[in-house]
Length: 344
Image (spheres, rainbow, N blue to C red):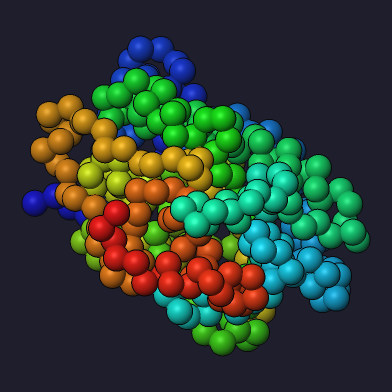
């Protein structure tokens, strides 16, 4: 019987571009990890430490702004689901998440939605705080850097699945979804529960998570074991999302994970980047090599959170469910989408 892992593996991304033996070892490790739970620490990622430090420092300056300054860009003012949320205003499976955060995505102009493409409402501009003008260029630079990293990791994932590096390019080029969140988790004395973020799966290709020094992230394995993922300096925590589970008929795990509220008297900062496909893309089912196809498990079926192959619909229903205040103000005509069955 396979033993469930008790900690996340650490993978050196530089080996993917290294000598043949190093590359082969990297690919074997990555293939096993993708099937086991899809979470790992990544070193050798090439993102400058100075940029990482600057982003964490700027995040702390943003959350130290007055409430009025932060609420000037409150998400409910944006029909595109961009902006600031107070702690308790985002929900996972209907329960409040006790974190405050700023959401940005690909900078753009509003796009007219149609009945068959309501997800076009997700396109549009970000909201930026006037009191912190340096935040916009810094976060857009970081967004570009982790987009580069996420696509490179996705290419490595393709190779580890016996595919060409570019097998997913048709569904993310020329403009993938680039959701970036800077996040602050207040201490337990300031929250309504221990739920920093409730148990969930990520919906995109891969997530690039930057943690500060405070732990809280946990991953639930297929066997039901919870693995702690404390911060490790110099690393990102990487994980695979539901798009890869769909594309591989469940060979790749998109594991459930959560974040526990930090103890009283402390706080936790993180920066999460979610690389996704284009909104107008449909996720294909790729043909895996025989030795991998024998380990396909099928796609997880959650009646409370169905997965669709239409990327835009997946993203839209996720935002409608997570941000009921934005949905009620701007998209009340779309709430019926939350009741669609996962037969698409």
